[in-house]
Image 1 (cartoon, one colour):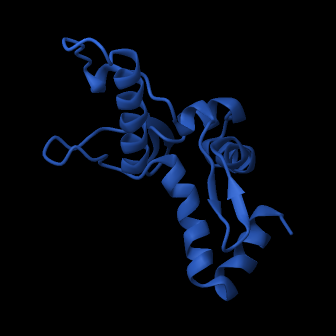
Image 2: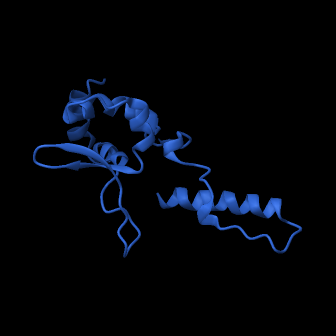
Image 3: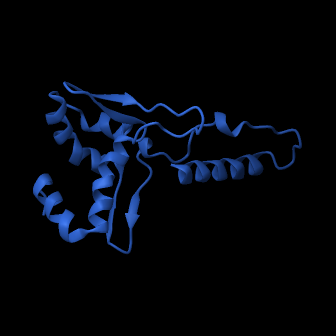
Amino acid sequence: RQVLIDVNRAFLELEVEARYKSTAEAQVDLDDVNEYFSPAQGNVLFISALNSWGFDTRSLANFYAPRLSKVMGREVPKDKLASIMWDYHLHKTQNDVKIRKLELDQSTGLPKHKSLFEDVVSHLWAALDDPEVYVPKLIQAGDIA
């Protein structure tokens, strides 16, 4: 998350510098500008050249939406899921599962919960850490080969 914030800030600073090179009074609030790169926009890829894999939020949503639909007891549209994975989390209670917007901790500025995206990819990270144990589980659970 912080890497994307830093990259967006760098791109904005370059744009402002190029646009207002000759004017000394150019002031831009970097926090009020739309992001250049955002997983919710579908223009960010997560890849590993070392392990030969890559994905974006849309491919994760295509994989995860049917499973989440079963858990929630109602259809979760893939397009909608892809657009919210980065900023929403699963709120699980004893009787229900809901998707809620991430809240930031006031003292740290960090999200209070793992995002849907982090929830899904945590299984991939576990598979990379111990492939002999987790890869067969992922294949079996996901009906993938």
